[in-house]
Length: 387
Length: 44
Image (cartoon, rainbow over all chains, first blue to last red; front, side, top):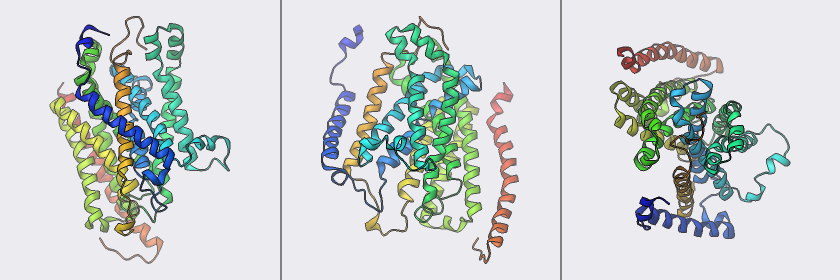
């Protein structure tokens, strides 16, 4: 423990808030695994997927896309100037996917059956199987990609050098797996054309999910980078401090252009299904809020921020874009889903469902903080060469 | 934009027509947006 850490008060606001959320989460966990889904959720036959899928899984996977986006940019496209962003992005991705799988244990009625798709099933043509297989494999890939940091921390030089040699293979594997399952998560909803509102339902759903995951990944790297700079500035080395703005502006420029493309294919999605008339309805207004407020606006704001070299605008736009991804995934999975049902049959999460989602986010924040304050994530370990 | 369609052919002709109008506009828009986005790089 450093000298400064020894003088820090134990009961900081962070410790109190996370402590309360953890206690509530543990209480709900006991309720969930003793009383079952009925005791802790508002799920029903109409609404079998609630926020544990809509938020924890769909949002979690999208926001964890920074791992494959950053490692592809650096190792496949050779943009070495963004190298300092790789480890934080891989860590965020790894924690994100690990928590997605953790959250699934709450949502799946009999969680011990999670490995069933791999050992007993009637075929491999199921989208859910593809998502399950990709998430399991990609979590393994992310774990291996993450291991150089703990191995350097623990001083296992040989093992670390071995893993570093696998970087390119793991990156390619990660991009392939991510392309597959990010899109397949959208494709899952293709089975429900009569349940999902026409403005959100489209044959292009897999494309929408994949393209928006790239935006989510880029924005999360900027967002998480700005938070790291604020709270873990003392852990950053000179290279990270120097490259911080270069990474933010580079990623903002990419996010701006990808958002513009995403906006275009969303408009084409409306045109292909001739859904223009729905824009004049209440759901249409909400769709326009998402399309103009959370896609077109951040595309423009990112562009202005890059032109004016405004770090503040880049940071706020990244936060806004991340919120937009949350809105989009919740729209598809919950808000525009079962839109034709009467209000009495619509789903609203039980407070315990929200409690578990907060519990899982809290675990992620604590794990991130634990790792970043101990392992070489925001700085290069002096005994090792950068890879 | 309300339009009655009696056959799939009608529907496809109409929607494809709209997409064919949109696409050149989008492509031109992309070029303009890229120039707007890269103005700083050109100045440097």
